Length: 549
Image (cartoon, rainbow, N blue to C red; front, side, top):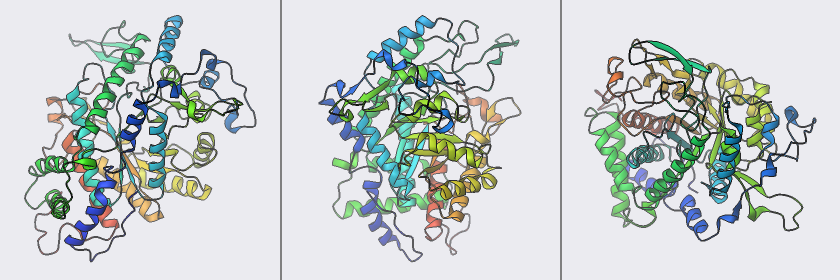
């Protein structure tokens, strides 16, 4: 595992290139290839290595009143959540149809495997120590209509491009996770929403909750929750993962190719911009690597690790894809093995479903997956510590990632108290920033949007707080796409104005950063790390005229 390289203001271009030559390949995941290795190993083993719990897993839980928040004690099983109140779950009119779909999903192959989750958790544990950065990105909500190989490829490409830039700037491994292959369901603040029809009339309809629950079609019938959509979503997830794994192992992540794509991006920036300066430094490092005889176009430099994650919202689907890892079953059969949610490598709980007495926490606390939790400025210190006691009572490193979503106006006021509380309690967590959800506004034309300037300001605040407290700013979580959409305003390259929002506003839910806006943010994160390491500013005192982002 590559280690964090201390910064020094006297480091020259050549020495920086030497550092990158030794660091960039393992940091980008081009040596160990854990996820790909797991795929090859599992391909030679029967699927029974991860077995399906039988239907009795939904039996009532034995509640231990002495456990945190009244959660079930050692009697946890994948169906324990059914004994708790649950927010945001759909009301299916046909219960027997739901049971049939769940039974069918229990017969399906797992989408992810226990070995992948263990390797991801090990990488997250290193990031908690300051030896890594987590980059999560993808659609606000996946849809059936937008599914295509090109769409998946383009989003993955931008994430890989961002990872290369951040790796260079931070001198740290970048863990890459896509909001893909499962990010369908969306929590909604109201059970109904107003929909404008083609004739201009406005009607109240049940809220659209994601393509695996109901459909984004303006009819009452389409908005009825349909359990069959869970099966359709599963099969699309399987295709998405096949595509991702093919790209990961097929040379799409070649370092030279990634840098070529980044050069295409910076050509659009003004001469002398920081984008060009930082890209030039990366190019110099790449030339040095090739000059000393390292072939970046073959072997381990062509592959990388890429994981998937989504919000754990539709518990019927998640339980049906829960599997017991048979390699951890006790030989004397005195107890069950470890359970994994095999719909994704990582699952996270949202701000609306993280209540301490909620079934969503009850479900994930018994899984061995790495877990994420969205945290806003509304979270109290004691509440956060109790939440961590519930989902990580053994304080296992790498298990919990706290995804901070506060808005640029709140981050500097509220994040310090939470960080101090967690540090004082000695809890192991990875702190990452979700700078998009707290910065959603409504434009004059009625479209929801997110100004890039606010998003970057929240990231800056996130870094400032951690630098002041001496803790590690461990990652960023973005709603983004590789496509050239016009959903978030701002950006310095092909700026999107409010009037321009309508040009290509395609989201099924919330506004997403386009590929160029996401890359701009990656370049600025890289420069934040360079500044923290004490490296010289990209704009020197001699030639800083016109030097800006």
